[in-house]
Every structure is written in structure tokens, then in C-alpha cells.
Image (tube, rainbow, N blue to C red; front, side, top):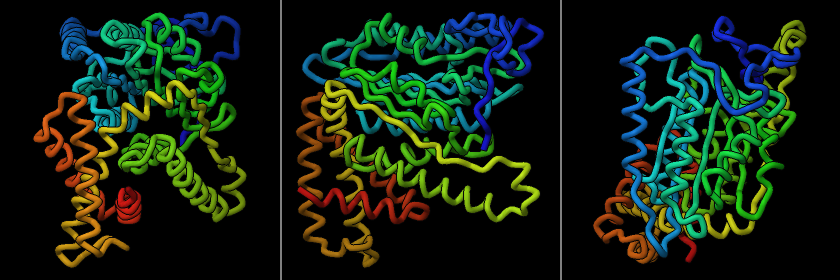
Length: 395
């Protein structure tokens, strides 16, 4: 577990490491959204601009009469765990919200001397993505999802760092101002960082659903560079959001998983010798926070209807194959009952897909992707796969 880091960077000589903001004048940005950065090399700068231009140019127009979803997923710190989380979360969100071609991923990279895969998550790129999305959407109809992952500070700032090159911060009011300036109205904001509960109050309005990894006075867990996910990202995206249930149902499932994992962390700490416990602070629950705006919740329900139906059909297809092979999931033995539920889910998926100009062939391919994913996840998540499938048996 890494604690939330004090954020702020002085001039170029201080770029190598974060500096506490406790002293007056320590923040050269004076509380504004931005970063102090050294220039990329000409080749790297050219490549970054090309990657960014390509990512924005590929975004298709919105479809009138459909709640289209556009996704911006950004890792703001150059430890590998954050890029992995941003990219994997983007893929899961894109499948759930039929937004594979409407997704932009930005990253602070994975450290020095590593090749960039995604455009830089520098503040200008982040705002450019919001600006482009804002010009494409119908603000009265469409949904925008913003997911950010990084370390966080006690003042609610999400750290922006590329070691030795760039340092800055994204604060809750920065994000709110950028979204407003871009003309983005209905939104889902997800923040995976220590102390991210600071984002709740600025986004407590009818047009926003906001989910955070921790309360405003708590750290979150699982930020070690070697991990594939933080605790929050793992629970919400890698486990709960793969189901065919609602967003908030998935969030509730994620809270239970996080509580279990954090309890295990605490039990490990309790088992330490007394001298070690004195050296290491007692881990406290992260207490993730949420606020649900009614307008945003209604838009999210419409936006995820297609992906939820596909998720159920994919899980049920996997369950049917297991049952036919004599290796059924727990409680899912009757092939006739599973077949009936699968047909109903496929029917919902085709109906929702038609409204989105998706052919039955497109929908069938998407269902196959989910069935394959369930097969791959089953060895490590057998209980979750069985539970998600059972939930899909209901009419």
C-alpha cells in the first residue's frame, strides 16, 4: 500500500520528485490545473502529437436518438499499475457501454526508457480529449465517462507525474471546470486515488454519478507498481462490472470485495510482531464514496442496456456449454432453463443493438467475446462468474 502523496512541483530542478505543498509558494501552478514539464525530444513530441491526433480523429459522431457513451480513461502517474488499470478499465467500460470506438486512453507511461503506447496524459491532452468529445456529443442526450487513476493527496489533488519530466495535479474543481467548459452535461466520474472522496461534493448534482476509491480522509489500497490493478479498480472493473447487472449494483458488489480484501490486509498487519506494528501505521478501511444524480442514473441505465444484455448472453452461453459438457456452474444444471434464459438475453441484446445500428452479426460477435472472457476468468473468479450468470437467469 502506498500512502497518498503530497503534491506539487516547483521549477525544473524539482521535477524529479513530488514536493509538499505545506509551505507558501511551493505550488508554481498556484492551485491551477496544469503541470510543470520538461519538453519531450523532437521525435517523442512529434509522436505524442500524432498519437493524440489519431485518437481524437477516430471518434465517430453521435447517433441521434441513442444515448451514446464517450469514455476518457487516464493514468496520471508513471507506475505501470496505473497504465494497466486505465487501459483495462477502458476496455471493460467500452464493452459495457458499446463505446469501443468512442474511447480515448491517455497515460503517463510506465517509467523512463519505456516506449509509449498511448498519448501522454499531460493536462493539455486531457483537456483536448474533453474538448473534442464535447464538440461531438449531443449534451442533452449522450453520456460521458471520465475515469482517472493515480496517487492522491490529502487535499483531494490527483497527482500528475512523469518522473524527472512532468509534475502537477488535477483537483476536483479543475475537472468540474473542464467538463463545464467542454459543454459536457451528463457524466459518470470515477476516481481511483487516495483521498478521492474530495470529488464527491463538487460533483453532487442531478447530472452526475461519481464513484471514488476512498473517502476524503482515507487512503486507498493496491497502488504498488507490480500489481495489475488497485483494490478499487480490481473490484469494480475486473470483477463487478463484468456482470449484466446495473452500475450501482456492481458498485455495491465492489464495496463488499474491497471490504474483504482490506480486512485481509488488516489481519496481516495484526499478525506482525509488535515492533513492526509500531513502525507501520495500522491500515484503515478506505471507505469508497458515491453520489448518484437522478438524471445521470437514468441516462446510464439506457446507455448500459445493450452491454448488460450482451454480458448476460455471454455468461449464459458459457454456462450452457459447461452444463452440456457435464461440468455445470454451481446451481446451473438444467440445460432447458439455461437455454430459455439465453434466448431471452439474446433477444434483449438484438433489440437494443438494432436501436444502435448494430446488426445481429455484430451482437453475436460481442456475445462470443463475453463468453470467451467468462471462460478465461472462471479459473480465478469461479464464484463471481457463477453469481453473475445466476443473476442473468431472472426474466
